[in-house]
Amino acid sequence: MKSLNKCVFFLLVFSMPALITKAQEIGLNFNHNPENISLEYVKKTGVHWIRTTPRILDYVEGRMDAKSDSAIQKVVEAGKLGYKIAFGFRWDFNRRKLALPAPGSNREAEYFKTMDEILDRVGPYIQIFKLGNEPNLETIESDLQYDSQHKVPLVEFNKSQLQHVLQYYRKHPQWKKPQIYTGSLPALFETSQQEKPGVFELIKFTQSNPEIMGLAIHLHIADTLEIPQALKFVRSIMPAKPIIVPEFSLFRLYNNHLKDEIGSGSTGKAFVLKFNYPDNITVSEWLTMVNAGKIPVSQFREMFDSQSWYPRHYLKTYQRYYKEYGVVLATYPLFQQGYAKIVTPKSESWFLNPIYLNKSYGVSENGEVEKNPLSFYDFMDWVKHKN
Image (cartoon, rainbow, N blue to C red; front, side, top):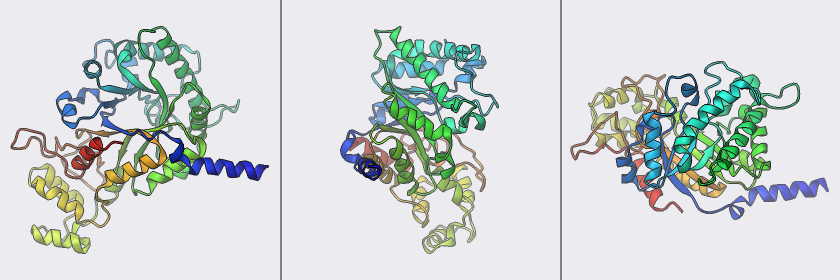
């Protein structure tokens, strides 16, 4: 009987594409900075979804005013224009070395009061509410482990937050209750993450609770093979509920190659010779020249295409895997946010991912922000052929 059950389980997991809704949406991600929402450029892309996750503890601590913050107003304005909003909060407990609040505690009540103040403004416009953002990174390690009662504090906090959000919307019956997702869990291709109780118990909770629509994950990768590795892990616990991917990029891959000499391979050497660069120029040195306005945008894609490690049309690879594993929504960055003008081998490469190079190149001769040739055209094709 055990063998039969095991066979049924694996058949269920590996026949996922036949069980999951085929609809797939692509939208724009503004991460923790809703102030960067540009409705002018959102409109140019033709997307319907906008995702953002403000840092809620900044509001709790009084650094920003939940009732009047202009960044939150940008979300409201987008909602009023008919854009679908995927919303949630970033809980930066680990950064502050804070334990999660005990269920029913005064500290939890203080957090939820601030949450309500923000929801009072954006609540009518939210289609997806996400209960967290990278909690396996933003929670102190002890709160990702079993406690003395064999409970995981992160999961207990999600339970409390879920009940509070449900109660909040019951108090506002004139508003449509959003779909609720847990997550977003990053780096699920890593064994160390897969083995954390805070990770697998949160996915189990998602699978078992009928009030939760599905799970959100992030895919910042060093290799495109990490995409199916993460998705297979999720599907081994949550076979059929929807997955959303609010953040994804080649961040780790780019980071790994900033120190590389561009001319180390044959096509890279041809690129270096063609444009008369020093023989030993590195990727980070070349990107510093880009950010200094010394490299025309026409050269941007050519350099990356000359590198054997760079996966051309990587957005199409993501799109293919998302369809295979039942990802119903993914959101991608519009503008460069994290950015260092001088790039070193230790710099963070977030600035290479967005579909516009607003900081590296600024405004082009036609008066529009310069497009990122690595991602813009494939992103627009995805919007056009999202299903």
